Length: 126
Image (cartoon, rainbow, N blue to C red; front, side):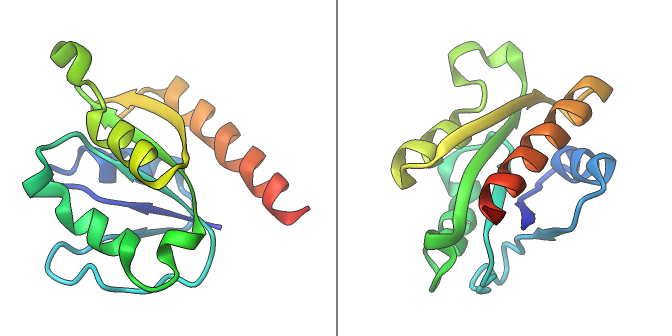
């Protein structure tokens, strides 16, 4: 299982680097890549115009079938808009919102995220 992510400012990429699991970064200039394996999607919170390449990636070939859940990063100062991109993806694609973190995540977020990934990986193998 892979972690697929999208990063605009680098905050999400820094979080991914802390986790240290195999990952794939969605390239906004060419999001039409088929992954061919189950994945967890991690996205920052931005307006739809900035994150539409994430939807393009999900919609491409078998990627929609392989998404296991979504994780959101953002800024809690935005109150109800915190992680709205991840919430929208969870709703639109009928997948679970697995975890949320602020900015590039704390050490506790890294530990918790690894637990989430490991638990899903175990369930996916069975």
